[in-house]
Length: 175
Image (cartoon, rainbow, N blue to C red; front, side):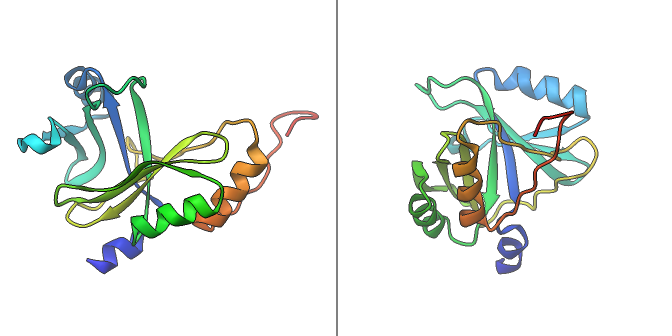
């Protein structure tokens, strides 16, 4: 099990959609990308589905938590060996913990964070969840941050996850 956690440390470990109409979303994405969806019959997961390409887990789709006023949104989870330690690191780097670390059944532990620009990102410590695959056709392949206060956000991600950055020109006279 430690091998799985190490393989995704500081890398995308999961993506999922929380939506007001999980059934319609499952239908849409299965037709769009050819995903098969395995809906959990365990009531603690509330109809959460794992999207697969063949036997490869590529995403999750589930209903929003009751009372959650936020719009439907995709969430990106970054792998960690210790989500509680990651939460401390996030705070030390100027971010905030939006959802404290919690167990997700027997699948793993998660937390939700906000970076200094206010953008959300989540941490995932896997326990029993199947391996996530990204970067293949019809699966997650790219995430980017569009925010004000980008310099603070970049420093945050470099500190928390050890990521590096580079600037790419978008056109004449633009960065």
